[in-house]
Length: 410
Image 1 (cartoon, rainbow, N blue to C red):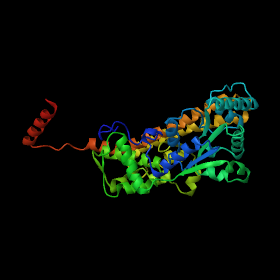
Image 2: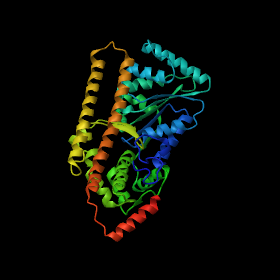
Image 3: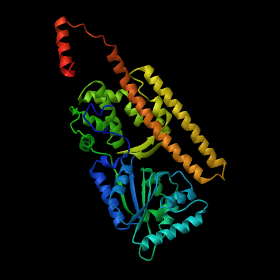
Image 4: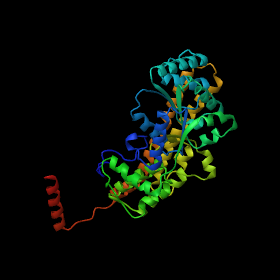
């Protein structure tokens, strides 16, 4: 919408975890170095943690884009599964058949596959994202997979990626053996104030124009303070700021502009709710310096821009979001019913429906954000359209007409 206005090839603050936009901050460079070291040294377990939106998924995608010759990968992104489904997803991503096979058969075939890969000189790597959703029992199952080994080497390297809650789960006495096998671990801390400023300019540069907008004194510091240095929240806020500048036909963003937008969209309440609201929030990381979904109905609708803007537009936005969330709740209830009340249903159907639900949640999140942006811009556009055109003296009319003809060749 505003890319052409600012001379950009593409939107600089998308939520998708695009490795091409990965800002090489100190913590992200360190995380990549640790991951590469762990893979090169065939460390058994590697642990990567970080807050929601800190860039974990982007780091993993950046790692996968690098030259990983002689490496075979299995990636698991849906972790709300049972033991058999987890093994099935691992085998399926390694390219093994899973239909009609029980857990014992799949484990035997996985072991044979890993031995074949080792004999061929390949490294087998398993990446489990959203690992904080795994129960202690499933984490123990994952540890058992690391027992697949030869006399002098591990057959499978495992990278666990998750939110800080994963560390709390791993601190359980029942997972002591798993903790002892984690040889490499790193945590993605939020960006510092200086890093946030460079992060914003870096993404603008990657999108085509580092100087697309002039930042006033204190503006980027306010972005850091509001986002708390979390890359995904920086992206969300800066996207709103560019839209706001575009709607006002400005090429600059000052401190007061940042504060105004933060208040208009109720940013702090939306992304940093109080204790009661925090308990209602259900988050899943996917996009950080890229992706992920935060999808409670309260977060998407009731906390929306209630302090300013066009109430009619906001009302329409909330109505659409309510319908979206009702559809999501209905799908979730159907999925729960399949999992709990129909024990003999094919696991593949459940996995497919779960994946469709996740995609729908992401679509609803993005759609809700678009509606929020429109709610923010619509009152100003309507006000501008309703402004009365001043009556110009005859001389100025002639000058205006000459200017138009000169510009457009009329």
